[in-house]
Image (cartoon, rainbow, N blue to C red; front, side, top):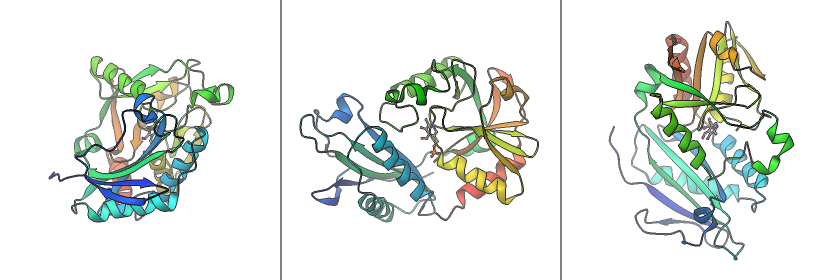
Length: 287
Ligand code: PLP
């Protein structure tokens, strides 16, 4: 896959959205996004120049801001920056756009925002051959979002050091990715993806009130399944149900649907036909 330079727009209430040099420094060493990971982001798939699930991503961006008591992002400005970044980027089959909002430079109370478009990696192998996944205990109960909302479970914050550490642990266990489980034995999500199980004609995903991110890709997969006459269900899913499921996927923006071909070192068959249909639906989304 060819690559080209990222396209950057800075976003602020004062200046609107302004194109900037992606190779030049723009964020202060005193920015709370850098010093404390105190901020939020979204990563949006772009296929054939179309930002996918754009409004769902913008809604979730605003929701994350509310959960962190950040100033409400100007979604109109962010939408404008996203579309302008895609327009200005080299015309490649698959890009991604990242939107960021931080609490800003310490003491100013003025948030820092930016948007950039960049070339997506080639995920063909993950989408077709599948991925090896291990389950890891997140160490939190499944009801943590209700009992301890200050832990911000379910907000898309910039504090992804734990998510990256989990992926390194997966690598140590000879796997590609992770399914987090709750300390009380339920399936949660991946570090950057939602989990989908197939049981017969039903697709299931963990209920999103369990301290997990409501996924835009998972929502699109459910739309596809419903249009195909399948049942869809949000459920509280015991970890043992992963073993009895007919097929498993991790789904997320950019990588899209990755079928799971091994769980905790035990090989599993993938549903190649349904995966291909889901991938084609996801890549073909018009909005
Ligand atoms: N869960 C977490 C923790 C994530 O970081 C992500 C994606 O970034 C997802 C789920 C999947 O969300 P989406 O499909 O909207 O990309």
